[in-house]
Image (cartoon, rainbow, N blue to C red):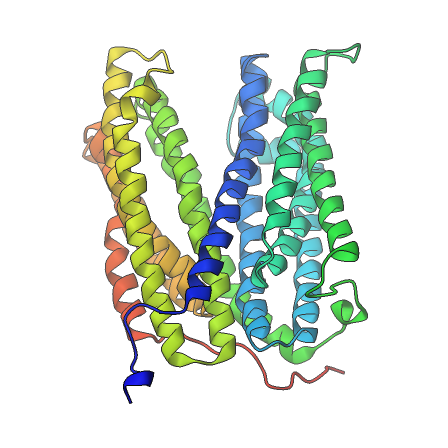
Length: 462
């Protein structure tokens, strides 16, 4: 009986090897991917303020595109990882086809809206005619990269579901190098090329996204030995698998988009307080976001690993692996939070802020360091383990209640009604990272999030 006794931590060495191997590649890949988006802003910042503002405005649109892309990819990971655990390849191909079709529909809608109503879309984020003009020039080209990004994200997601992560890391490195190089040449008109400003940045981003897609496609055709994804099964219609996908996707999409919409609104709240608050928030959140990618990487890794284990069907192993990952999340969170707090002064020395903005920035970084510790538990457990386990309705309900029934109303009242000091407004805005830990922990320990999403013998539709 002792041999089958359930342990709190998993003793499977292969689990630890796989988890840390994936994390080592996924975390830097997320940092590099984030840097691809930042490259346009940084390089345009030295070109002109209007160009920088125009690109930053369009990046608000791209942020929402990311939320749809992530919901599609995360749904695919939840389902495909379970089938990979059962060693069933055909359903993974079909599910990938469903994801690709949905991606193309979403991309077509986004391109139609951006292409037909660019001024209307940009006015959501700014009323400045100069910024709208620059943003429109950028958007007309970069909107095509949105479609490439969504499709590439699906292909990277299915590879992650089966433990293939190195190619995504290498693709991101190539993409960053290409984007920065083309930006330098076309924004500033180097080596005999015309000086194109913001349009040059858009061309660089578009070419980088196209290259990402081509490299992943070539890898799947020539090098992939696990999925053989380029197969007739990918376009096969299957009513049952489509139903399974939709059942997981709709709550996942709602959870992702509900959270995504709140982010620019929270930034807008701080933007109405003072110029110093805007500067301090911009600086402090930049450092915070770079460390946050490690947490996002842990979420992605957790989703794939727990899905594989659920597919294998060993309930004791599912629970012990989940508990192990939740504790590792806490350890990573403490390390990241302390690192952010310890490095606050050296990091701020890179910026020329006035005394008030500098004081606010230090206060914000101290607060965000503490926030990081709590977020590093609740996000990988909810968006990683639970979503990978197939329980997307819990995420949707939690985000709807915490963000829109609690945090957003309190944030508006704190800023405009109670007129609290800036640091307290930031605390209210970030407060969900603290109280979400309670329902996440309780739901996690109930193990009701463990959902079998696979079918023993998926039947073909008519």
